[in-house]
Amino acid sequence: MTEGDPAESAITGETDVAEGLIEEIARTRPVREASAAAPGQSLVQLDDVSVVFKTRKGFFRTDDVPAVIGVTLAVGRGETVALVGESGSGKTTLGRVSIRLIHPTSGRVWFDGRDITNIADEQLGWLRRRAQIVFQDPFSSLNPYMRVAELVEEPLVIDGMRSRTERLTRVYGALEAVELLPARRVAGKYPTAMSGGQRQRVGIARALVRDPEYMVADEPVSMIDASSRIEILDLLRGLQEKRGVTILYITHDIASARHFARRIAVMFRGEVVEIGSAAQVIDRPAHPYTRSLIAAVPEPDPANRFRRRAVGDADAFATAATVHAACPHSGAELAGRPLLLEIEEDQGHFVACHNAGRQRRSEHTDG
Image (cartoon, rainbow, N blue to C red; front, side, top):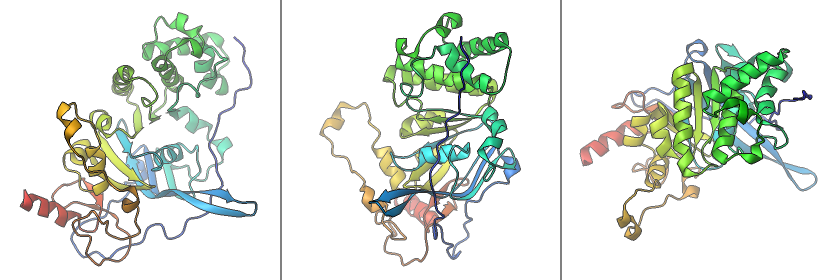
């Protein structure tokens, strides 16, 4: 086995400060705004984080593209939080910001009570050992010219672990943890000789070999067949229970988030529009976009072939209007952007709506 000069890949981009992302609104009702927990009370804390990428328009012009807009999110130790949303909603960008693979344009990022927002990349070696990521595509994230043992061992080489025997012991342990058995035989294979599910397990083993406290699982089952998805999710759940790993689960499948995560945060075009426990968000969705996601989940009922289902208008959801057109209170004249407010009758359930509490009451009355 050869030891090259491995280098960690980091996702970077030119960003400018985005102005006017979140405005304060007048407090006219006894609801409280969703606020960030104290940095010391959670393992990972994002406080009013925004990310704006710069793109080229012709030879001399550039344009700002906001990917994340004023997101505040806390992930407790040993907790699984799901980020749910369609493609392009900013889920992956936010996940990578949480482990500083992307530098935020504005806002603060905390890890275990330490502000990592402006720490130089070369001084984040300690974070790389404590926080890892499982990438979405197991076919492109693994070097096809390296054996499994070399792929899983590489982070230990970067960390300066000189004993080859100790490295291999850790590699075999990681492969056994993800149920790639027999570990010694699997270690000698190339990724091209493995199925998609097996490759994803190698990616998870590569993340686990450093024994991290925090893991970003970026749509870990979207690129593999349906029969392997439940196995990977069960594997991640088992690893969390055994090792106490904190997981940020990024997915567009709100159905899997219900069964895998403790809390769900729904993102739409860079903003969190609803957050609460899995039961609150799925059973009592308050935001029109969350309802459209749930309505899009296929049900195993043959009669659905003959039923028309309402489809949400993405452009309408992104309108600049303060109150969305699909909201029952869209006729209200309100100034400023909606903030995440706690629903009065549903403690811990927050929605980006000025009239969240009134909306819940009206539904109860109508029902």
